[in-house]
Amino acid sequence: MTRSRALAAPALLEQCRARALDLLRANLGPLGIRAAGAGAKARARAYDAVFARDAGVCALAMLRSGQPELIRGVRLSLETLALHQADNGQIPKFVQAQDDADFWYVGCIDATLWWLIALAELDQIAPAAGLPSTLKPRVGRALTWLQGQEHPRLQLLSQNEASDWADIMPRSGFVLYTNALWYHVKRMYRLPGAEQTAHHFNHLFFPFARDVPEYRRLRLLADYARAGAKTRELYLSYVNFSFFGDEGDVFGNVLAVLLGLADARRARAIVSALRRANVGLPWPARATCIPIKENSRQWRAYMGRHRQNLEYQYHNGGCWPLIGGFWVMALARFGSRRAAYRTLVELAQANAHNNWQFNEWFHGRTGDARGMPQQSWSAAAYLLAYDAVMRPRTQTENPTQRRGGAQRTQRKTKAR
Image (tube, rainbow, N blue to C red; front, side):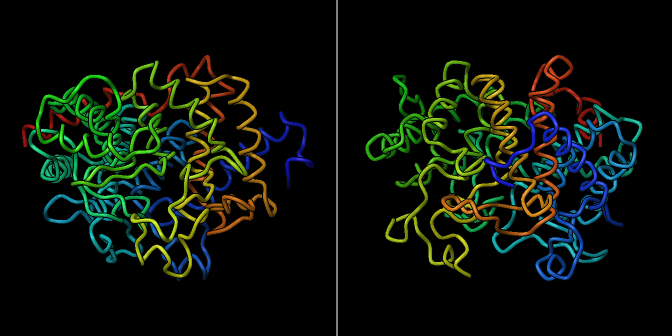
């Protein structure tokens, strides 16, 4: 399906919603929600596994579906991941079989963040379906593990490169996407220092404001970026010692907007800048505004592995329906309702490719479908976007803005 041959928009949106729910139900397995539909190709690349980050995103939509089967699937996914938690508290990147947990080459920091977010959502929306009380102490260990990655003064998480969802990208040190999620976790679990995290987040990732950071180390990091950054309307994708990323991380910027790290004025400016960068073309939405070229100092040899992360491919400027769903939500809140509706229709058209394949990603220039089909979080992100545009009266705030649901959980973990 292409834009020129689209169904009437209302019918298309409803059909995509029904297909998305069907896909999530079909992708439920004995361990929880699989990243993609079952099959030989999925098994060969571990896409039939329960990924913590995929399950976390899917939980946001599955819990709001009102369907008992999907709600039970959230619980099962979180329990599977919890039972494979490392002794130090880290949640695995994925669990493929009953005794096969993977923690990635250099660690996977966002797996633990998304597990905590999904657990808090479960506790708030469907407390009767929550995890057994015997697993609640694992929350405390997960939080302790994350706090061990936090800078004592900046109260931001640090990480290796290639260790979050964009796992063949050079983002390292303090990473925008990861710390947007960390701020959200701190608020959900009533952790101390959330406001300090937000304060340093805005000084570090947006060093172009007039006020100067008071902490000398942070001020020096910001000075490097001020001297060399080309993209000055968006948050930097990462900041490390003497180097940084200004390729325009769309997912990280959109999460910062949706999770309340940007004030309303900056949020509108970011959404406007992303619209001018045409991140919704050829399909909603590109992972980066400006892909990293092979002659760039940011380029890493591993990005060319299997020729996967070349320009306008995969994390390096490919179009992801996952990001497209969150982009629609940002447009609905800080752009225009008309733009959000139009982009939702385009997102449905992307998912409808090849008889509703819900592809993983598309080439950022040609628009060709790439990656694994029947992707669970492509379906989930569409459902979240649909609710943000089509049900604004019953969904007055973005699902990622909910907080407070983990209060009972946090009280229990403090007493362990």
